[in-house]
View 1 (cartoon, rainbow, N blue to C red):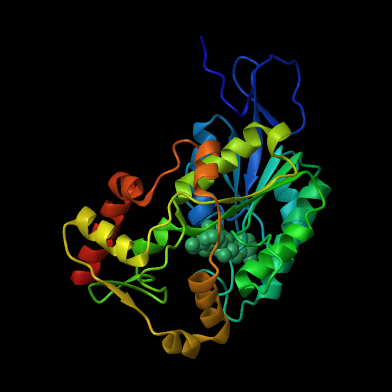
View 2: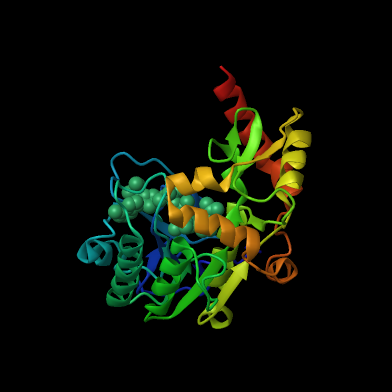
Length: 316
Ligand SMILES: NC(=O)c1ccc[n+]([C@@H]2O[C@H](COP(=O)([O-])OP(=O)(O)OC[C@H]3O[C@@H](n4cnc5c(N)ncnc54)[C@H](OP(=O)(O)O)[C@@H]3O)[C@@H](O)[C@H]2O)c1
């Protein structure tokens, strides 16, 4: 018997319904339009949705340059009409935007730009008549306190979601430890206090949660959930990475003055993480996603190989 996959409408229908693509045999597969499909989260979401049986329309500014497993469609987050065109006929939309300091963000990109783009995506999804939007926010965005700019921007986007939506609020990604952001001069180096636990999640688990939300709209629409898979201290992160890659990488805390020299907002974000933190519930996340990885599991599956590749490349 055929396994029922989330994106597959199980009954045979005679004609195409909104948001579906006919397959041989008359089965219909519903389509999710994935914003930021060439990025870290969008790629993982695309792969997971395809594996679960959804059709994916992968949005990018430059379809001719993009490579991946789903068809690419051109859309620009500053152009609502282009987003509407790219989303029309889709069942769902996955929404993510760059933030201030994101590697791919244009020069001068501000929190207001992030908010405008997030609102544009939601507005376009509403105009295109999609049934379910999943917005990737960040943990802490639901709290009523002074928040780092990247968190406060997402809180503003959340408040503007005027359609059936789910808000997923991931903590920091384990993937941050696979490149120059945290691996410097033979050490794991961030501004975080060495012995304060910091919450982490694997991007593939964010993708799995996104797929879960699309698969059970009755449970997930209207929900906002902070999610985390582990909470090691930075010293424990460095020790786990060292053990996984077989070479000693000590933890070194970057002085807050050095971070302040880059920007006051970055310094505040760092202090917020050290003093207040994300405060997602790891056990509750694992109840939603029993396979949610801790750092060691992620290192064993993919992390150590990626870190090794980065260290070998940078050693040449
Ligand atoms: N890193 C962490 O620890 C962490 C944790 C929680 C939340 N977050 C949040 O995650 C977000 C970034 O997600 P990510 O890492 O998946 O992004 P990413 O890898 O930087 O990718 C950004 C995506 O945005 C697309 N894009 C950029 N400008 C665009 C525009 N004008 N119009 C249309 N598309 C555009 C890019 O597509 P093209 O270039 O192909 O057009 C790309 O696919 C940030 O908001 C950050 O705050 C990060």
